[in-house]
Picture 1 (tube, rainbow, N blue to C red):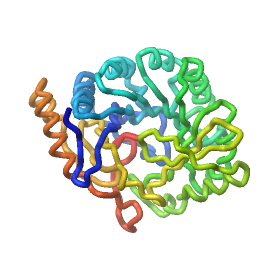
Picture 2 (picture 1 turned 30 degrees about the vertical axis):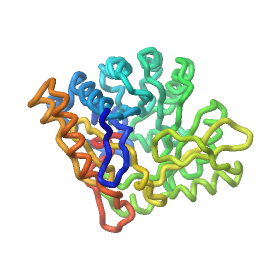
Picture 3 (picture 1 turned 30 degrees about the horizontal axis):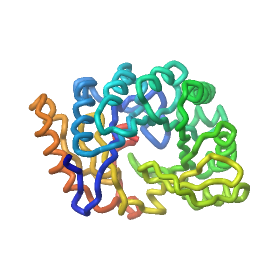
Length: 327
């Protein structure tokens, strides 16, 4: 089996596959308040998504995470899970979701072979939740989390983006929420994607600051937990909950990057903080069924994967919101 190895001898075995740019929320750090979504014909079909996934698994990718937008606003997402769950060599199929539709879909997703869920939850305050998501309802998300637990998921992680002056006072509350349900949690530094203004710059809260808030109540012990992603994990002496930190600003993890993204438009995005991309959709549609040509395009394109992102360099800006990138 071929392997995907970039120009810096990093093996890529993890694909984040975006299935839609649409979402039922409008989170302030993810998209503009009035976003423009792609026409349907520009979006990869169910068959095209599974074809791209098959090409990657035949090249040694062992882990695929479905992202968006919100994957579950796509009505055929549970069928895509079923298709991908049958791919030879795929060891881990997971999804990042806002949780709002899990009360209905958690059980079919689990039954169709989804291994793990990452669920976004930035606050436990209903009013602040609606403010940060611009229209979301906290009770629906918490009900979705509980539905996922009831469906049989044992690998659930909460993702929280902490913004200074908005939800940084809730860090320990979020940890306690996860401790009560035996869930893991990852605190994520805000990604500087989209149009950056002074307001966004000033609300950045570093992983070290978040960690210090937790350690005032729960001393953190470095953990050996690894998920194939960029999080650094810690444990607490009296709980099975792991606490992770994803720090694109303060702790650059590029030297061990093992992942690429395919956007909903079928572009192979080689770095979250870089505009380099390869148009896989054009190949899929011009040469349907020619998986060898698709795999060769992936192998050729991976040589353009940059050594690192540049989120820490003043003035560098990626004018692509997270919903168009894939979480």
